[in-house]
Length: 73
Image 1 (tube, one colour):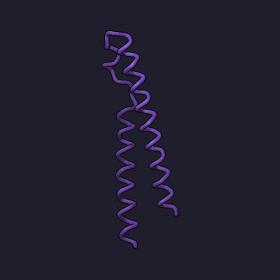
Image 2 (cartoon, one colour; image 1 turned 90 degrees about the horizontal axis):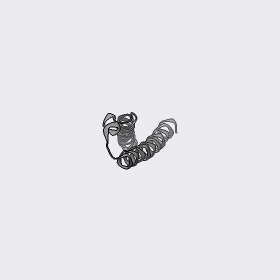
Image 3 (cartoon, helix red, strand yellow; image 1 turned 30 degrees about the horizontal axis):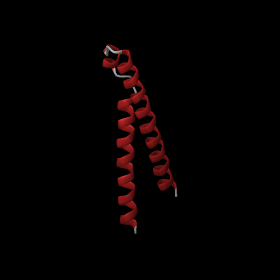
Image 4 (cartoon, helix red, strand yellow; image 1 turned 45 degrees about the horizontal axis):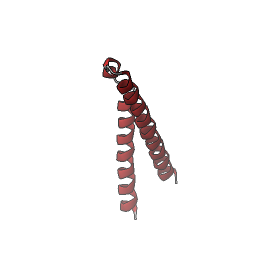
């Protein structure tokens, strides 16, 4: 039973760290987006980037909560 709990915790921790690293990678606005010529393309890309950042941020927050709940339970 202890081995299963430990493997579950390690897997969740690695997944949480991966999601947090992905969120940190998406946090700054890309510099090349300011050089995009058609304004519609620039706006579309920045909107997509914001949506991806929000989605990954929510996933990372959920995984942090799950990790804390598993450790504190």
